[in-house]
Image 1 (cartoon, rainbow, N blue to C red):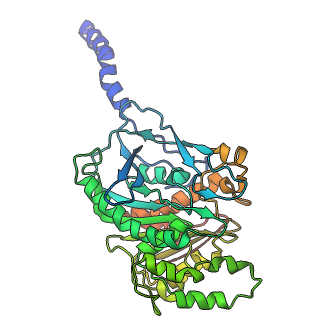
Image 2: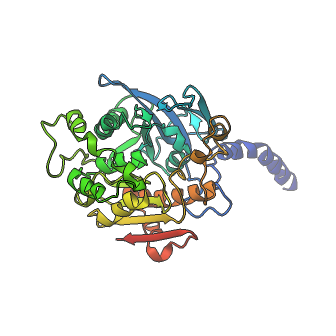
Length: 416
């Protein structure tokens, strides 16, 4: 009997790797955040993250899109990728727009999609003016790790000192989101690598800066150029906020791009998409909608912004968004003292932005540690999307006002 026990033990030791190794190979990613003190929902989610690029070629103007998604990683390969940020849309005297910036990402290029829990809710992400989606890789990668498919178009536009392209870009951005949603529906219904991955019944729109504007208009906000004009007219000629009124002289051009016969005297026609169920705007421009136009939004809203934003001023962006949308569920997370660029890639992950281009302000914040700001933005956006698109009761409870207590965050919420 003793010899039999020893024999079985030896056999077991030889067989043990056969059982342990496959299990180890299927281990998920480590649940860590950007900082050791990252709160719940800011740590890496249970899914590995893959990324692929596609081109929407259904019109005369092809559109590049990048997709982040839950992926298979049987060998537990470290998530590592180098994205390239192109600056050729920036046209400024003395700026070398031919220089590109490498961005250290945390995803698996062209990894096989994890179809087991599919279809996953969809998040469309719109980048800021003149930039590209990879400048927000830290955020979209994080959302994919929690079981969302993120599709991010690259808007083609020119960013210069005179805002010469913004009349066109303002309208084309709005028109691009339904096009992206149509493409997502076709992609998941195809035999491509994304077949069956996307749930078109659960959709959110998100964006930062002019991407925040894009998210607002896609969610149903309508231009109120009369209210916008009155607000601008009340400013003194030397008021530093005058730069926010750059669209006022462009109304006729905007109407032409929108294929309108004349400039509307009331609210402009809606350019939103009814497939969108939730909205996230980060430092998003909302001034062109004014109170009446923002009141057209009724879906759940998360507005995030810095109180010292010098580009999209707090009182011209996220504050009026929260105050004026008609949504029954809405959140305003204000980062005290933060500026406009806290949601862009950090200088640590994109050092050439500061070192080669001299644009340190684009990858840093005067007050906030970027990793801390990113952890908290990840926390709010992830909990919000888990609640609104997956019905996660714990995430809903985490967004209640008495459950949110982070130093430097002023938090307001209704319906939570």
